[in-house]
Amino acid sequence: MSTPPDTTPHAGPASHAGKPHSAAVRYLFVFVLGLVLGVVAVVMLLRALEARKTWQDHYPKATMHLLSAHSAQLRDALQANRCAATDVLPHLQALRVLGNDLEPAFADLRDDTRFATHAGKFRGAIDSALASPPLNCAGLKTTTEAIGADCKACHRDFRG
Figure 1 (cartoon, rainbow, N blue to C red):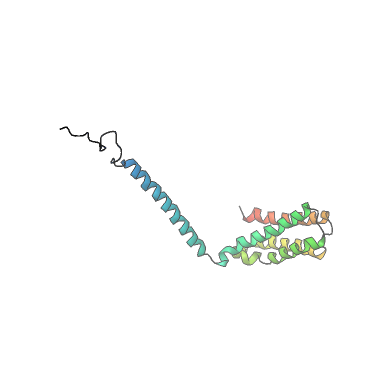
Figure 2 (cartoon, helix red, strand yellow):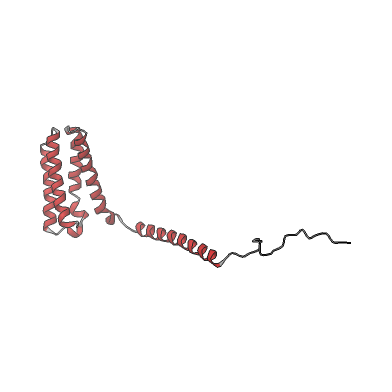
C-alpha cells in the first residue's frame, strides 16, 4: 500500500508564514512610536506652560491686538466709504480707552520718557479726532494717518 501524498504546507524557503519580522521593521516602528509620543508630550508641556500665564502676561499683547483691530476697522470703513461719524466714533472712543492702558500694559516701559511721549502723542491724536470728529473720508484718512504715524514711531523705537 502506498501512502497518500502529504498535502500540508511546508515551512520551506518559499513560505513567509512563520518568518519573523526583520529588525529594521521593529526599529522603524519604535522610532515612529517615539516620534508620536514625543510630539504629544511637547504639546502637553507647551499647553501646561501657557496655562500658567496670568492676565498680566497676556495684557500687552491683548492691548496691541485690540488697538490693531479697531485701527483695522477704521481702515475698512475708509475703504468701504463709510466715513460718517456714527461709523467712526465708536472705534475712536475704543482706541482712546485703550490708549489709557498703554503704560499699565507695558509696565517695564512706564518710566521711559520716550514711551510716555509716544503714548501721549497717540492719545493726543485721538483726543483731537474726538474733539472734532471726521465728517468725511478725507478727514478720516487724515485721522487714521496721524494715529498710524504715532503707532509706527513707538514701534520703531521699542519693538525691534
